[in-house]
Length: 288
View: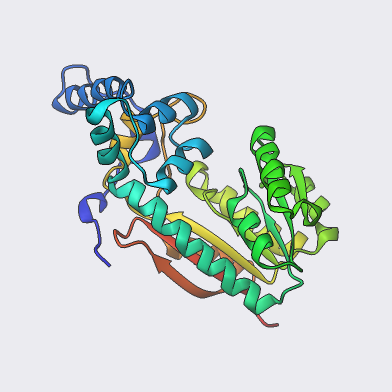
């Protein structure tokens, strides 16, 4: 694994939200980068999608996963190729494959009749892939975005798995929403792309405790962004789905493991992308 060391002391979320002095070298540099990126969006399909839907959105992730430079004119495609080649975009593609592997192994451990719950499913690509290849598996897709759930439902019908998928509009951190899932008795819970957009460490710790208390899944598959030398660029140049700065929270994977241990879970495996930006892990409920 090639570690990216530039983010050894990354700026905090509060620092990333704070405006830079207008005439400071960093302020000038990032304003220039933001202007260049906006102009590039006139030609690059990926930048256009990012500024329209958010660089944390499903449409942008779909473009990154496809990894096919698109744009107006050869220059636009070259700009798009550079975007797709950024370390963060490479990591997105790698952790998708790693998450698939972790989910597949969780299903091997839990059996073909397992129930999967994805608590921030979006269009639910992981769930739908699992349902398509495991005909006895059932799943629940939860999300606060009704559009994403509608996309998941439409895709499930295309794949012929809609009868084994339940869609639920719910906040992953809402105890009442989790309680409504208790009757489904999920064996595997997916927490992918969830931790980075919530900055409150106590919220994540309490959430893992709630999972153990209310659902008690046998395994949890998660990812966490641990370091990223592009974190300030992303915050000052890109925009999220709300049109605000893309401020992501970096956390050591050891924190997640410690919180999981306090909730009664032990790590089974931890994998990393080649640049060391993300960790994808699987937790197993500890034996009493």
